[in-house]
Amino acid sequence: MTGKPLDEDEFMPLFEAARWAPSSYNNQPWRFLYATREDDHWNAYLDFLSAENKTWAKRAAVLVVILSKTTVDYNGEPSRTHSFDTGAAWQNLALEGARRRLVVHGIGGFDYERAAATLSIPAVYTIEAMAAIGIRGPAKSLPADLQEREEPSDRKSLDDIVNQGAFDSVSEEGDE
Amino acid sequence: MTGKPLDEDEFMPLFEAARWAPSSYNNQPWRFLYATREDDHWNAYLDFLSAENKTWAKRAAVLVVILSKTTVDYNGEPSRTHSFDTGAAWQNLALEGARRRLVVHGIGGFDYERAAATLSIPAVYTIEAMAAIGIRGPAKSLPADLQEREEPSDRKSLDDIVNQGAFDSVSEEGDE
Image (cartoon, rainbow over all chains, first blue to last red; front, side, top):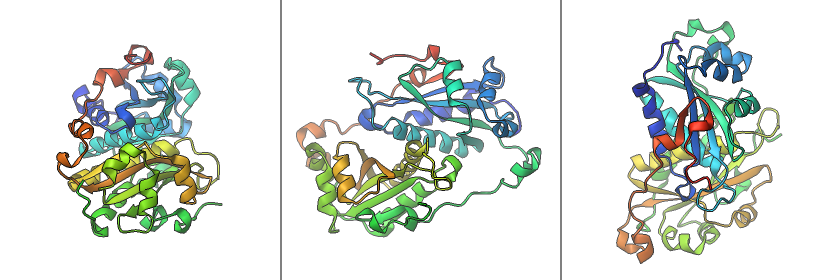
């Protein structure tokens, strides 16, 4: 990413797309905290990240912490689908970013506990992931080992993930 | 939905869209089991559903059980993001269905335990949700109480779900 800031009207539509995801009982458990590189919180957000993720994410325009509420609004009971539903909202955010030619990169390598404490996240919410949003920069601005990874990643085949009927014929590849 | 069957080439692209979701370490924990209304498994899938969901889902063309693998392929450790990642794949599936003018309806009201037993789902996988895919039928084919719900549902405002910086100013509406 280039390190160039984004205006609010360039990144808020990504949250708007996330907002419309479907969820069980329309409970909408997703919440998003963010910092732009001009915010007081920027360095704190950046410091949640692992050293490796910092090397590239420091040139993002926006860092996001994705939360979900673990209980159902209308009855306070534990929600079975809060993470799954929030994953749907996250995919909408990422797709809207891609549609706008932005880089949107999900991040799992960060200190969940420190983020929860620093951002005063109540116990009824859980952190699902972080994400970095920015403008695509030249691959050569990355460390050499990350430059090599700047190509599309493959996916499992449909046969590995889809099966008609019961589970027994789904591929068990990788189950060791 | 109309009860009209779908050909494989009409619904397999939805799984193809799901296949390309992003996931932590590209672990792709999503798995999909399905039955079409012409399959031996159709009645079993339908019988997982709550009585209310049966009233409309019986006219779907495809019923899907969405699973996620709870461990990471490469090291066998528990995955923190399996549900979240699978939610992303589910959103892709639903969006591809919408793009094709199909109805794709997520379902949480079903017997998770019975589905796991009937479909021989190994313990390392968990059931996230079900979904019904079909061709939109007239609202008047639904029971009266469901006809009334055939309108777009609202969503929380951006102010309710997005906050700059720490958590403290995110709306706590509905937290009681």
